[in-house]
Length: 155
Image (cartoon, rainbow, N blue to C red):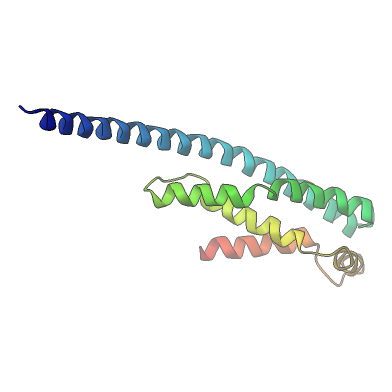
């Protein structure tokens, strides 16, 4: 056997070994991302619960959507949504390489919901709260939940 043949074989074996290491690293990255998605979705559910409780309190007249209250709630959504774009891109990248990323679809939905919530103005919240107290409008949390159920039943 000549030197070029053994070198070729050696190079092929190196590539073969590296490919398994890359696959292993990708699998670990997928597992780690799934674990983080579970935590992120749990945090999002906690934010939604606070949002629903606050919306109910506003509808009942126990709380008003003033700047401080709104900024506190919006701050929760903003903090949660800040890394969402990068997380969605990472999940899509892994999925495009054949990995099934558990929780990725739910996370994307939550990210869209958070972004939508961040687009609601304080004036609009105050107007909705006033209409809810007057019985002219359902609380925002109730409407959002109904829209989510409709979306889930279609998807």
